[in-house]
Length: 87
Image (cartoon, rainbow, N blue to C red):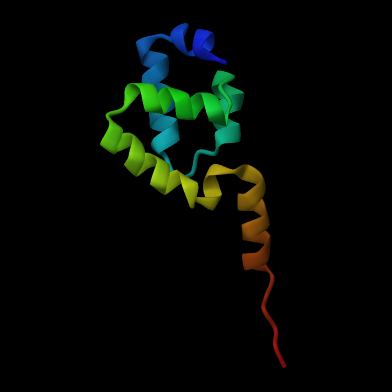
């Protein structure tokens, strides 16, 4: 588990990860590129640092959000760009 990685983060880095995780447009892949924390690590950090109610609200928002996963977001954008022609 990445508890060593999470414990080694400074307060400022933890705040930065929490801010990126709350942003709708910041994907988990982007967070991993910037902090080396994968999705499971971010979830563990959020669970440990947020109040239970705040974590539950965040988790509900993230679970259905296409933009939090770069691959799903790109696929969704492609389908929106293609015209839906029916005759």
